[in-house]
Amino acid sequence: MLAFLLGISGWGMVEQAKPLYRAGTVEICGQVRQVAAIPGTDQVRAVMLLDRVDGKPVRMRVICGSMPECNVGEVISGQYRLEALPKDKFYRQRCADHIFTHAQYRDGFAVKALRRNRFWRFYQLRLTWGKRIRYDLKDDIGGVMAAMSVGDQSGISRELYQAYQTAGIPHVLVVSGLHLAVVCGLVPLALERKKSRVRHSVLSILLALFYICLTGASPSVVRAGIAVILYSVGLLLGLAADPFTSLAVAGVLMSVVNPYAVCDIGFQLSFCAAAGVLLGSAMLGRLGISVQNASGWRKVQRLFLQQLVVSCMAALFVLPVQLSWQLSVSWFSVFANLACFLLIRPIVCCGLAAVVLGGIPGLEGITRGLCLLGGMLTRWLNTIVGMFCRMSQKSGCGLAFLLISLVAIGFLLICMYKGYTLRMILPAVVVLLLTATLWSDILQYDMIKITVMGQSKAPAVVVTQNRKAMVLFRGGDSTAHQIQAYLYEQGIPEIDYVVDLRLGTPKPCPLKGNHYKTLAETEYELPQPEFPLKDVILVMTMDVDGGMAALVCGRYVIWLYSGSLDVETDAAGMQLLLASDGAPGSLAHCETILTLNPNIDWLQTQPKEKLRYANGRATVRIRPCWFCRDWLVRLDT
Image (cartoon, rainbow, N blue to C red; front, side, top):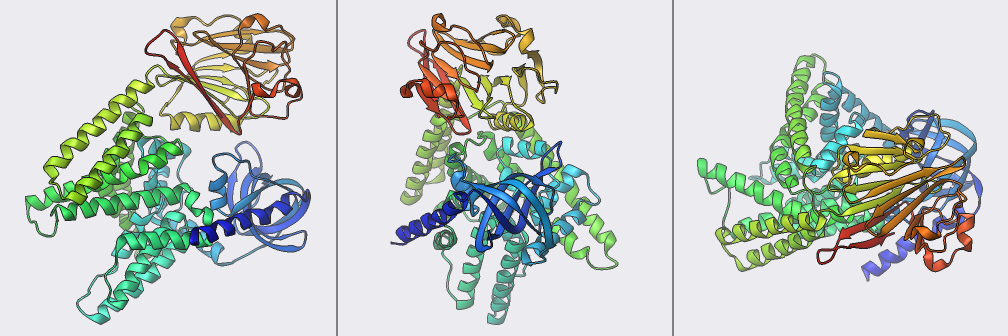
């Protein structure tokens, strides 16, 4: 019944937004909540909380892809056209952030005032504390320390964040339940007397609420904050806290506010990791492995074993979420989590102590010493991340790894329920994971992935095989950023070959590769010694009005067009056409037409069974068949 009611309320939130973007251009007024500068322009991307639409009160967040420069907290107004969000894989993610429509700026931009509300005050406090931490440190070191301590990620470069993502530990840079546990653990725990227990519980609740507001109320912090509050309320009432019940209640309460919260990637990663940690701890307790009952070297052994089991369980439970969101996944991420775990607590403690003591006159020397100590630990953390990033780029995971890892999770749960000894469990789990890694590498070996992305009217194409990449580039800087982010997701650090398909564009290509060619320079079949992909042949030609490229993989041929060509393609044996605005010649022998823009005029004359439309990104997977000299083709849209 609760799920049914939540579903109705979520549908009502989406239906409430539909009349807004059906009304055309409207006058909106709202407060700016997030801002990101667009490189090379004076425009920004922004998220706004609307107050009024055409004079009517509205409480809804919108995302604007390009608008005049503004700052967080300012109340702005102007003429905007509200549009429906694209139904891509990030649609429900945006709904989880209370964003139900997209705004296109038209005219009349004006800044009315600066609203100094609670949101703005905590935002300014977060920026002030972040600057205080970064003052005596280098950019990357201070940025990581500020992000881990107070949630200020403004000092982290794109390259550093992608390195953490490739290593499989981007959650370290996002304030989560681990960081909140460190903060609440700073309160002295003295539960012998009732007065001390009440004081500890009240302080923990206040710290949890303050930290939630300071870090912007991200789903991972809200989930952990609700769990801490429930635990503290249990202490006030003299009742024992059940962690699984607290986790479930936190999920229900967050879903009551917004049913789409369960679609947020932070929500999913936080809950899966918390479930893995709780089950790992429960398994160790059932096996009788406790740190409290040991001393000396045995205590160190059990502490290391506890961290290893908990990290493995957390990594296994978040694996399905990572693969479903196409994040970088590697077997080395478990060891990266284990190596970085011991550094997180002292870095957070140094950062928080520095920002608190920095506001007291006469303690500047102590504050600087704490920042330098935390900076030294952060430097070690970045070094470890760089090492595991290089390891992760040489390995990968796929569907086989996912399936066998899920089997390993089920096996662990059964062993925990039966109470088997650790000597029986660990060898079986190691064999399962090694088998998963081996089969994943076998299934991905020699597979060719052709991905279409970027501008819908002139998409770029990324071709990868065995961690080598070639890019047939069209578009601008935003397309280049998408391609770089995609390659980092795949664990590919550099591009081997870049072919610029743009016609009449004086601006140089923003992508850098080991080899670079333009369309005019590639009027021939590229020689195999310099070509990075051993099973793909690129054939190019051009005339005055446009150019044509063909990717040949065995007997499967994929065609691309730039500009407008009047050529006959009947004899080409075309299997797939990656369509753009330019109308090509005859398409009688084309089996499938794939496009990111369904509104191209000449597509309307084609049979509908040939057309495949992808919103934002499409991938063609070509896998070698093991039993015959042919290729298996799969088109994902």
